[in-house]
Image (cartoon, rainbow, N blue to C red; front, side, top):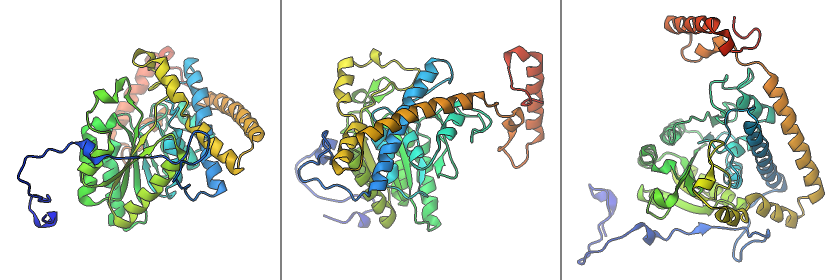
Length: 398
């Protein structure tokens, strides 16, 4: 066998004299699973080194997001917010992975990773301000609900077009490398986004440039209504990382301990070897794709019920109780209080004014151009002509 670095085609040469074909299943990529449903470890599994404070913070963030999702979907049904997306069943994938990062590692999310943002310190008030697009929203009301972002928390603002963050993460991580920073980037996306061209461009770029980035694929079984077996034929997504010359690992996404350990090791590898890593987390999407989706049209209630038995929060909670780190009665009181806090925060946020219309043309150039100013005046003139169609809070227009 010749070394690939001595071959212009960048391939290893293993000469055979009979035709042989290889498919992705020959890789036989295993799935890392540490925690059983009852909170005990699988035989031969080792628990990651998690101190009590970190372990409870992971649990608190997962529970927070579960309750926030529950209340805000109800608020959308009531017409109080225009749109919402839950991460029901996928809480461990984003919270436990964020826990394994350095706070200054850049996170580039898709749109179902609010758990990672909360773990980093995004407050209930900040969530509500974004969802209601009020004058305290960090995005100044320019984004759809659940399109969060925080410069202070190193969380890149989410954009609606699918997969755009993947090549961006490769470029950002390469910049971290050039600056000699002791940090990596982590990019979340679903298996549906892995069917976009940006996925292939981003992974190849990162592999060739040896960018310290973790590509974290949440394989939840469906790209909106399209099941995975109608998206691709290969063995999941992890094998694609191997195809692009990077190391890959598949993990049980409903197992917070496995997700944490896989991400911790992937970060160590990406930083020390300055190269990308792909993580594929298998976690069934228990909720609808979004508040605009009805999953009953493409999957059965029996299927959903079967996967509800793999609830990541319930499994992790069992482990915490076995460790003696969680009291059931105190936890119930805290959950009840949080539900009320969410409702109270919603009432406050929805009463706040919308951003002033003049902020609409800011942040494009250092100073708004004459063309932007003219367009803003045209918009104001239009609103004056049809005031009933554009109800604005007092003082937010002129």
